[in-house]
Length: 138
Length: 71
Image (tube, each protein chain N blue to C red):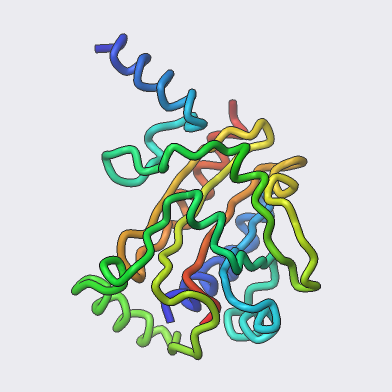
């Protein structure tokens, strides 16, 4: 449900990302056959990719394993996600793999890095947009 | 103090980080990877075609959001 919630938020803010002329891409690890349903459920119409080998996740150092799976905070976040109508579907990808986000500018410089520590940790949309704004104002 | 900040920014820039305020947490958590290495990573698009990540920031900045799964 966290992933649905996160991507639905991105979808709601797609116009903000379009306004700043950036390539927004969501990368998971499940089978590409599930892209269509995932887009339909979340309302996300942007770039969607799969990294089935988790090579990029691993390179970025995103946590994997039970330790990062759940916490008390995650349980509260789950309640919030459920309230918003984001139910857990069948898991397509690695449930034990945590996510994150990076912003990279055209020079190849990384402007933002976020690594989830527990399930339900998401980068803030305004931080992502701000990081792009900062890079474009230089 | 300013010298210290300058030095820290130089260290971060050498690792590909240009703006330390955008790193979550207080410790460096970037696993010492290089953006070049990340750019060489290949992902699959909806047609099962291989796409090199670096192509996403060739023309404009890229926001890459990694999710746990598609469920």
